[in-house]
Amino acid sequence: MAGYFIFISGQEIVILLLVVLLLFGSKEIPRIARSLGQGMKEFRKATDEIKREIEDSSRDVVNDFKDLKDDLSRDASEVVRNVKKNLDTD
Image (tube, rainbow, N blue to C red):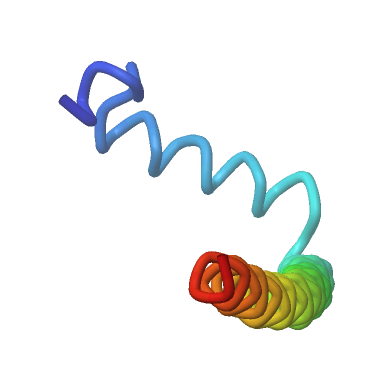
């Protein structure tokens, strides 16, 4: 399946690498690789930070819903008690 996405063979990859080496030179390739590595590191750091923010905010929303549920349960119990009390007195 992966072979369908890349339409180049092993020999063509070697030729491509040689062309890149000739174009950029042996000193420039490590610098480019280092820059790409730093870019990937920053990207991962940013995505981790976004994930953390989403998790924190979702935790707050879940806690708010739990509080709302508890309040509604308490109010419903109070209404049931009042209705039973009124029915018992009639």
